[in-house]
View 1 (tube, one colour):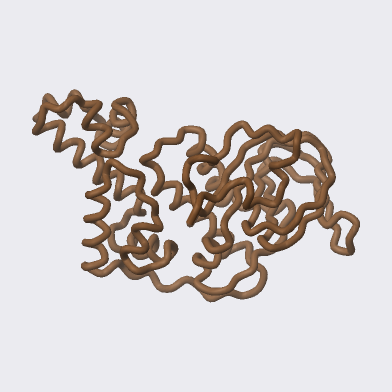
View 2 (cartoon, one colour; view 1 turned 90 degrees about the vertical axis):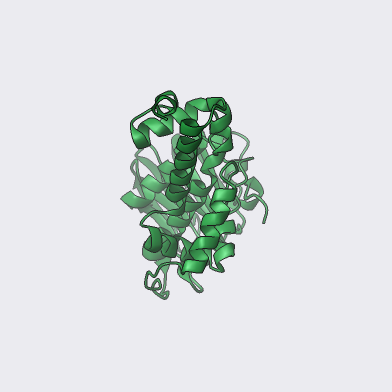
Length: 289
């Protein structure tokens, strides 16, 4: 599966005056595309996209109309924190009535179907509020801003959480509820943990871990947390911290080299994580060995 990108969106971000401050382009994310930008007033029609579009308004209020010129036309004075949701495979006619800062999240339809565990349609929404979804969108934007290649599993996890929240609270019609949370089997967990340990120095897509366990991404995330008490990206970070600590206490390799071998982007990244996780620094751990 290739990276989800601008070609998979409905065209709003391709308007000639849209100049994104940052996007997830080039980061290798295959199920989600994120863009932050300032938008100018416009009125336009867009073709159906393969991805679901979620827009978070960062300021406002601003008037937005959708379904312009149709019997289903809606108009809302949307405040900061308002959400605009456009399902995949549906045409869009929209009018933005003022200058606006936004974060766009485009989510592949298979991620949503995966989260639902069966066929699901999302609703068309204009001005809805969802504090959890808002924080997830902002979390994706911060991840783009402060990108570290070792955070790939975390990016996948955030995308899966967005999909799950959309299915749970923003669907059109009934979908089956999530399966009861049960943990990975001993064999599944051992295989996944071994792969994490083998690839500490690399980005580890959540889809790779799920495939190893023979599960969908959504199923894997739930069962992994039921087994370990941690989401996959947090568990992987713990393994990286443990290995870095071992190498610092027992070896003499340069700290910068150990950082990269354990999946951190550079020595400062390792230092920042060790301070947050253990309240110490690489140099202090080395002295304690």
